[in-house]
Image (cartoon, rainbow, N blue to C red; front, side, top):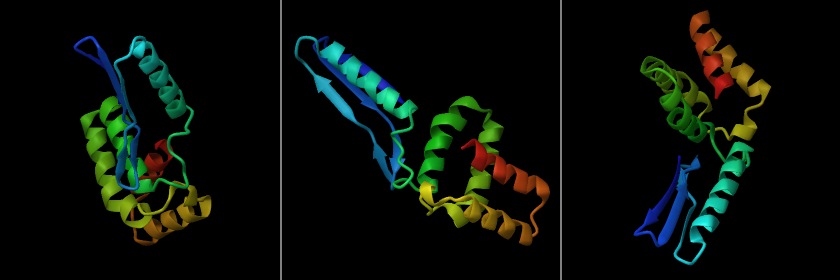
Amino acid sequence: MIHLHAFCGKTWYYYFDMGIVDGKRIRPEYSATAEGAHTEAEAILRRKILEYEAGTVFKPQEITLQDFLSFWMEEYVDLKLEPNTYYNYESTIKNHILPHLGKYKVKSLTPHVLQQFINLKTSEGYALQTLSIIIGILSKA
């Protein structure tokens, strides 16, 4: 979420919510009152947006799957998908994905780790439909 505000027409302030890393919200902030502060704040904001869109915000070696999925649910699923989809994703993530994979750093989620996870769910007797939902969430996120 991106915000750019003017207070009393003199001070420009922005913050850019980049999500959660290791349980802490990353939210760079900037304010200025000098002449041209609005232009400067906009330039910094554009740079932050480009960094975010280029994928340099979340470094896979730093963020856990739990933190990433929390961010994804808040910033994508909640805003773009239907409430029932949100509820179903939230339930699947909470009951299936996080107990086994939540503490992994995103960088550590290799095909081997993911296949072991799916094999475990298969051996636990989950239906093909449940497995497809789990795989779909992991793929989409």
